[in-house]
Length: 221
Image 1: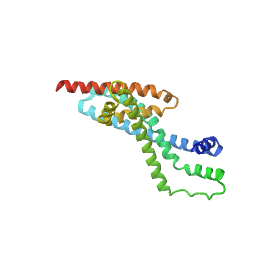
Image 2: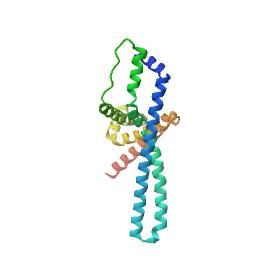
Image 3: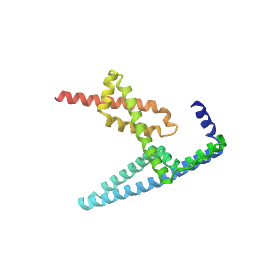
Image 4: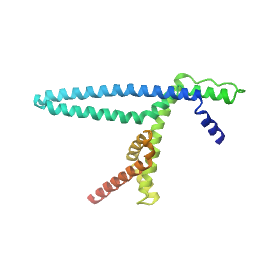
């Protein structure tokens, strides 16, 4: 296993590998930009349509505050799309990379196993479906694992291990959504070096809010 890992790492910087990497990242960036532009145009149109509808309902006196509100919404939408694009980058790269991984397999087989027969790529539809599944799993699994681990670490500071795990299971939906925030943070290059700091601080806040809400419910009873 270690030998295979070393061989794969040694080939990462070879010209064929670099070419595939540049192609997959380039296509992924173009795809994300196009999706971002389309979503931004759609949401801005919806905001403009909603403003016009509200103005027709409330009268012309509401034009200025509604215009300010529409401007704020447009800015928030743009920022949301940027953050969402960063979060989706690994998943889109995984999907796009599906179209190029056969080139990698072929290169490895030719250079490292020249005496063996060369494999054949799977059907295009099957490759697309597998890539889509990989992309979805990369988001879900990352969010689940990071959310679970960091929340339990935060909870274990105040509760026994079994109780911390029980609380995490009880609030699994909330912990999973929180894990998606951490997964988004992980997707940001360089910034992701601070993932443990952000994740732990974030989950301490989440734990405190959960336990505070639980105590409030208990006191009301």
